[in-house]
Image (cartoon, rainbow, N blue to C red; front, side):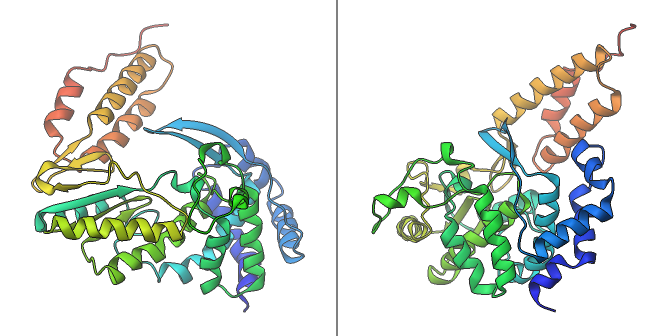
Length: 353
């Protein structure tokens, strides 16, 4: 069966609906789509089959976690399409990824990335940690489409990819500061770029976009002590000189993807000094939670305790907020920290109305 026929097949669309609706069935947009579900899926299937499908408008909101980020939520029917597409193409592209790319992949994740970083910190003397400037706003649509087309040769699938890419063009324009690369002319400023943060496709395509870079580091630079989580990555060596040489090569290669790094922060440091990584400072022997994360959680805990005491939220809601944080920080050496926070913030019963 052709690839696009698999994308728009009824079983795949139905499965895509189920995945898009997971943990969201109480939301009005999900309930509205679920009403007359078969009719809505058939209409969507017809639009996709006739190549008349057009994505809707995004809803935007801002979060601070810890950086300010603009999140763009696609209409529910478009999220169904995103799942339908990824159901089919993700296995084809996933098999090309290196094993030490940890974000948005089954069997990977934050905590395994922290474990691997610490294992490397125990084996090597020095680390070069880098991150990309405005990663999602900077992703170039033409380059991404070319990378995808190297693997996906189905015209229908590439048409749908193009539709989804076009729907996000300019969404993050205000967050991108123009960078001119060698060979650019003035028209380079008009190149379509940016993937909406919040799309399933954006998370997946971020890995696709940086996959050539992952292979460059591990194969061309022959750096086996490397890992990446979204736009944060680290290279390890026992030689400072080697790491600084790799830094120059990394900057040059990323320029071919129209990306830059935060150069002043990209310095070679001894692993013994600790490595800032995914909310922790990781040492060869232990891990500490970043101070700002502790402050942020403490403030949220105080606010939720006040709400619980006032009867505004239930104990289950209070408990869920606490358990989510504990589940993250328990991967560090945080027993004493947790004991101190919870002893100094006792839970009082709700006041009588």
